[in-house]
Structures are given as C-alpha cells and as structure tokens.
Length: 381
Length: 135
Image (cartoon, rainbow over all chains, first blue to last red; front, side, top):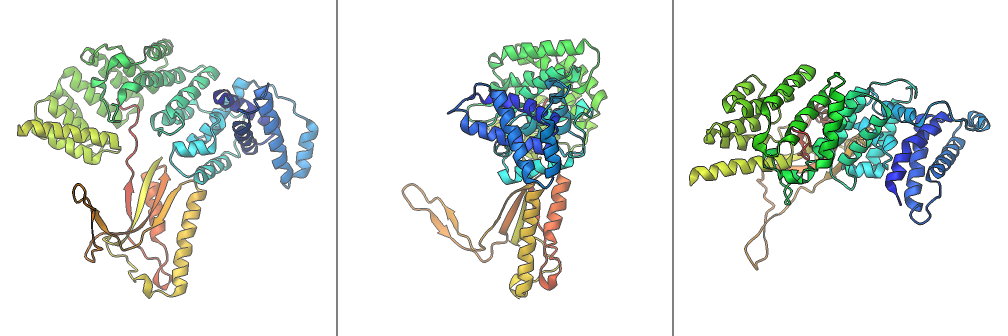
C-alpha cells in the first residue's frame, strides 16, 4: 500500500470536510479514523480511487460521530445541504491547515503534534512513538490542541513565520523512531512551498535540504558524532545540495532576507567546500553578522565566535567568545575547541571534560568526553 | 519539548517541611495522599505531558561482576545507603519552567494532618538526541 500517497491526501480530504461544513476538530478526528482504516484494509483491498475512498469514509465517520451527538437537528440540516465544495482550492485548504495547526495560541509541542497529524497524515500512534511518549498522552495533547484552536476561523490568514518555526522544530529536534521526522519535515515544507510563494519558506526548505544532504556522514557506524570538519564529504548528497543551493539563490535574489535564508547560506558555504580547510570562513562570518542582525540570538553569536576562530585564528575566536554568557549551551565546548587550536591543551582538556558534563545530549557528551580523553592521553605520553 | 524525571527519595533529599513518616499518618491521610498522586498523573495525561510513573521497593540489592565463570556477587541492602530512590514520574513538557511548576504541584501532595508534605523532589532533564542543525 502506498502510505506516502495516503498521507499526501490527508490535508486535502480534511479541507474538503471542513468546506462541507464540518468543524475542524470533528473533521480531523474523522479523517484520522479513515486513515487508520485505510492503513488496516488497503494492502489487502486497495481502492481504485484512493482520494474518493478517503473522502467517503471520512465523511461517513464524521456523520456517524455527529449523529451520536446531541446536535441532531443541526446535523440533519447539514446533511440536507449535501456537500457543495466551496470556492477555495486544495492549495488554499492546505495552507489554511498549516496556519491553524501552527496557531500562536498553541505551545510548540502541541503545534508540532497537530501539524504532523492533520497536515502530515501521521497516526497518533506514530507521532507518540516518534516523540517517545505514550499514545494516550499524545492523543490528549492533540485533542487539547484542537480545543485551543476551536474558535479560530478556518479561512483566517496566518503568519507564515509561526508555521516555519514548527517545521524547523520537527526537522531539528526530531527523534528517531519508525517515522523519519527529518524527511517528514522536508515533505511538509516542500508542500508549503508549493502553496505559498515566500522567500523564507524557500530558505527553510534549502536549509533542511543542505543539512539532510550530510546526514549519512554525520554519524559513525557506532553512532558517535562526526564533526563537520571530519566528515567524509564524498558521501554528501550532491543532488540535495544542488537543489538547496538553487532554491536559496532564487530566494536571495528577491532581496527579502530572513533568518532561514541566512542559515541556509551558511550551510551552502560549507557544502561548497570540497575539503574542510577550503571553507570560506570569512564569508561565513559575514553571514553570521547578517543573522545576528536578524535574530539577536546568543546562539548565533556563539556560532559566530567559532567562525571567527576559523577565519581570524583562535585568539580572535576567544575574544569574540569573551563577551558572551558562559551559561549558554555549548559555550564551554566552543571555548575548549578554541583553546585547543590555540595550543593550550591543558585548559582545553579541562574545558572539554566540563563541557561533557554540561552537554544536553548523549552523543555530544560522548564526543566531548573523547576529546578530553584524547588530549589527556597526549599529555601523559 | 523536553523530558524530565521527577525523582522522589526515601532518603537523601533535604528534609520535607511536613516530615512525618507515612506509617504515622491516619489511614484517611494515606488514602488522600494516594488519591492526590493518582489525580496528578491523570491530569498530566489530559494535558498531554505524562510519560511514566513508577514506585520502587525500598530494599534493593547491589550486584557486580566477579570475574569469568563466576556468578555475580550480591550484597546489601545497606541500611546506611545515603540516597534511596522511592519512585519517579517522567514528564514531557515545553519548558524548564513548566517542569518546575509541575514538580511544585507534586510536592504539595498531602501528608500528615492533611497538610502538604512540601517534600523535595529532584528534577533531572533527560539527555536528548543531538539537534541536526548546530552551526
């Protein structure tokens, strides 16, 4: 059975139900039911018209659920009206769904869950597995999110920036389960890019593609992290890089710079270097300056300090680091790296060990511990 | 979106404000305490933040490898062990502040006299998977 097809039809079917008069929460439940039914029956008995099948089953589920409700009168009116599709197109419906599922009244985790279900066509179970929480918890998170947006009009225009933040979260902080959340984030961003012409949407898609291109080289077979400078660049996916660079160039040409375009530009400069030592760090520092103007994020200034260290030497990097809050995540790791480059191995080893204790994820902690161990072993020889 | 462990200690945490051992409570106070804990977990499930909750028996055994071909050595329980875990709850929340808020609520579970125990819970973040975009 073609699960990808099934999932790609989801937002469209949901849009049709909403335009027939179903409220969003009930329509979304009905589409989810139809989806689960399709996953159960399609492989043995594939429908000739998958979209028609989904619409019919979802609409029936919606009517059944409504019939069970107290609002019998209203429902009968609704059935009598018999579905006349509204004027909006499938593209508009999809776009409205993105806005609704990323509505600013939702917490990030709710927006992520709702987007993956209503737009992505994932089942509650799949989303729960991906984020390592019980299915009952995820079901509640989703129904609570739907209650939160219950009063929002479906055709209300939204802010594309909130949608991009949600998609970025799915891509960047995705867990690894049966569902490939990075690939899912890319699919959803591609679809958004097809629905709306916006340079930051293109920028985010480019950013995702450029990072996804390095995926296979980012971890060693034992699961340990391989830093950018040590990655086997022959394993980078050149087709994804080319697509990302094309998207980025077209977006930049429109002269409406945003943070995702700037981040993608940095990723593109890394992708452009055949060897780590050929990286154009001077240009990367310039892009970090642009990024700092756009976001004023301390994380950006921290990454800028790394780039300055490569462009102008470790002392300059340490000077750039000096003004930053040392409680920032990865601050100590960056300090350790710059001290090592400066030849101050004892300090570097101590800082690597300290950074390992502060690391927020196990792979980074193990990597930093190995760095400390490497320097300590060298000193005792 | 971060997971935290709320760790409850039999021993090893600073003393609670209402520090009366459970066997000195009335049966009704014990029931009220249990009901509060269950209600707390139920509420967290409804908010979509509950991951897991478990209680541990107080007495454990220490086990270690004792060399090739030999059975593992066991020892204990040690009455003097300073840190003794009573149980935990795992939550999945949007922020550290929310985790602190929930730990505070859990610490308000009623104890002797029906008053909040004010017990110290240890809040520990889970290590995550590495983010994709770091540069």
